[in-house]
Image (spheres, rainbow, N blue to C red):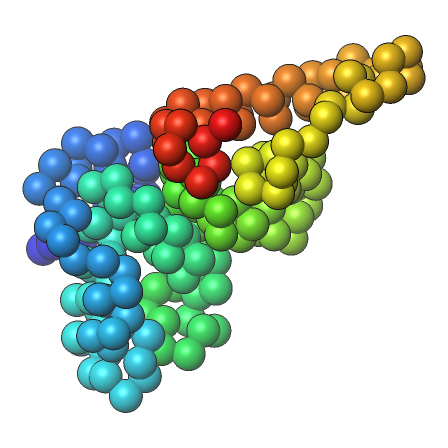
Length: 181
């Protein structure tokens, strides 16, 4: 029953918030789940499925590291040795976006790669730039560095989207975080 609830909740992310009310982060980390055999093919599939259910539950409860791992596993599907989660790009995108919005650097990178592979170059570029601006040092926007360079409205809109996303993540993380500016 729990597995069906989690899978239904993952299908529609906005509805998942209320469906995940019983899920908590309960001190279980994604590292604990991996150590217990989440991706170990020698562990019985039933046990790996229970561990995956726990991972999804903690992801639905808002644990960013679990969202990142679950999103990565959904993007890889069963082609990753030991993974019991099917390849599901829409679910991967939702989970990785939630983790990236929480400031998870690897989720930003994975999301950029997923978007590029899925033919969404602009979204890939957006997440790459956000990750670079947050973790790779502060970059001076090209419009500030070279006034009158003839940036198009589209370029300026992109820069504004990057800046808004960076500001939102920094506000969520606070000034003491590695990405906080």
